[in-house]
Amino acid sequence: MADSEDSTPERDRGHGIRLAIAIVLALGIGLAVPLLWVWIGSKLQGGGADTVNSSTAAIIFAGIVFTYLGLLFCAGLIVARGEAKETERRPPQRYPWNRSMRDERYRPGEKRLSPIESAFVFTTVVVTAAFMLWFFVLAGSPLPSQ
Image 1: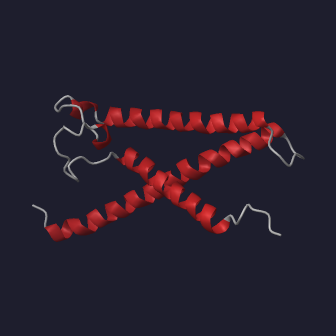
Image 2: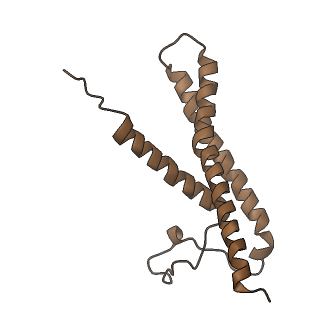
Image 3: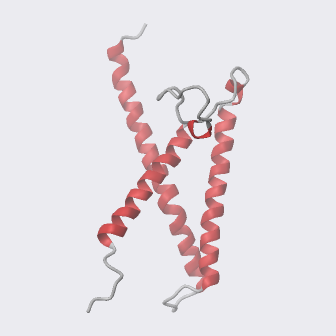
C-alpha cells in the first residue's frame, strides 16, 4: 500500500498540470475564438475601412456563437464517450442547477464537474473578470470632456 506522503507530491503535480491545462483551454476558448472571428471579419471587409459594416459584424457574431456551440458539442461527445461505460452502472446525474427545490438536499462536493465543464466554467470566470477590469478600469469614460 502506498504511503500518504508518497502520493502528496504526485497529487500536487496533478493539480498543477490540471491548472495549466485549464489556463490554456481558457485562453483558447475565451481569447482565441473571438480573435479568430475578428480576424476573419477583417479579411472579409477588406482594408481601408475605419468602421465595421453590419453584415461583417453579423458574420463575426454568428461565427463566434456557432464556434462555441461546436466546441460544446465536441466537449459533450468527449465526456459522453468517456463516461459511456460508467453510466450503465449508475442512474443519470442530476446537476445542481437542474434540481427542484423539493428534491433531495444538495451536499457540496458530492457531485463534481467533469474536466471539460470545469474548463468552460473557468473560462467564463476569467473572461468575465478580464472584461470587468477593462470596462471599469482601462476603458475610460465614453462621455465627452468639455
